[in-house]
Length: 192
Image (tube, rainbow, N blue to C red; front, side):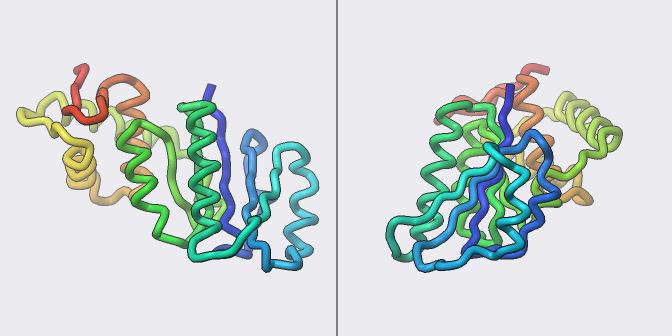
């Protein structure tokens, strides 16, 4: 079973509505050692999360220190459970190359700038229709992409109206359902 974890970059995003965190999501809030006070509203909102919440205070300072801590705990989570759905709550685009790398390894990871966009309520019908269409298009495709970036570009070209989160979701579902098999260092294979 997949776990869901929200990694909060409190140095980057201070306005957080923890009431919108789904009941099955664990939350890790990372904050700097120079941050002497936590926002009272955040602390009050955090109380109902109980054991699902972990506060992680940095033990040192430095450029991107908090980002490296998040990357470490993210790696720990994916080592513990390679099916975990991890979302980094941050406006810092520096996380994006790491996220792309994790996606290429078949891990489920994304970045969001709000709790509402971190775990949106899926539109099941539209997602199901898009996925069915994607599988049909891949079946018809003579030259299927052999690299993850090629597959991403193909999905984006076929579904230009979708957000990047939706594109990634479609790609992740292809892997999850073993329609696409990603072997690190080798070409993609298809079970169609």
